[in-house]
Image 1 (spheres, protein in one colour):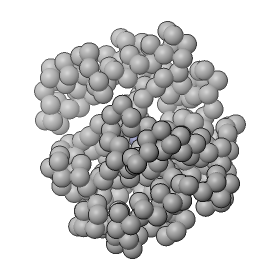
Image 2 (cartoon, protein in one colour; image 1 turned 30 degrees about the vertical axis):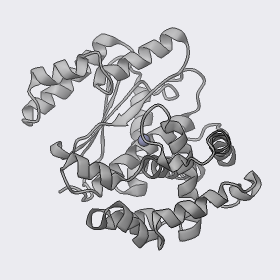
Image 3 (cartoon, rainbow, N blue to C red; image 1 turned 90 degrees about the horizontal axis):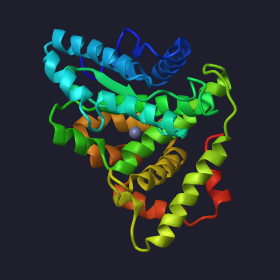
Image 4 (cartoon, rainbow, N blue to C red; image 1 turned 90 degrees about the vertical axis):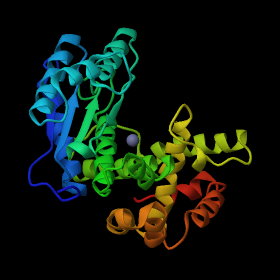
Length: 309
Ligand SMILES: [Zn+2]
């Protein structure tokens, strides 16, 4: 049943041109995230490499499943996932191949449904760090997998199948993405510190939190009178992520680190975004944003003091 914990592990499906190590590291990360936040599934995590033929084989494996489950016809699934468009499976392979061709790591991953299929469906471009490319630390990729998996946790707490209702229950971009990013940054760090995740060298959490705060401060000074809480998905979405990351840091400091998963999400399906927010945080989003905007004016050293450490 949707939203219930699942009794078996998430599935990671990797293209045949990827080293075994990529799949191992990704699986390890996903298992640790599921152990930390609850195992919401069934979860399928499809990992593209850079070879196009291998990607098409993997898409075929996905489409066999979709057809067998009566979710899509095989031919629709193949056409959809191999077309030149965004967020389909081949787009993730193309992104990795392009990045390798130009020597610049640009990747993407996403939870692309599917409530109607009763699964969490993820696809990702080649996880560069796990593949030993571009000198990136495992930690960076672990954070990305945690971020994506947190979207499964969020979606698991919304029952309705209606697309628009689901979107409104997810809340504004700053809340959804900031929540995933804050939880991913802090939990993956904790799991590395405890030895549950493989260690690697990465900038400390305080530095990783300082960059987005600087970004928010710069954005505020070049957009006087505007609030990053209003920025939706789209070309400027990055600022909503950074703003939301800190908004969740503030909420976790004020109301305790368990308020989000222990109070907010369990009531979301009943109360909706605003109602669940007020229930968990004892204030309206309007009151919160006003107070948080004051916090944004503080010097960075004072801001960093609220981080878990
Ligand atoms: Zn996200």
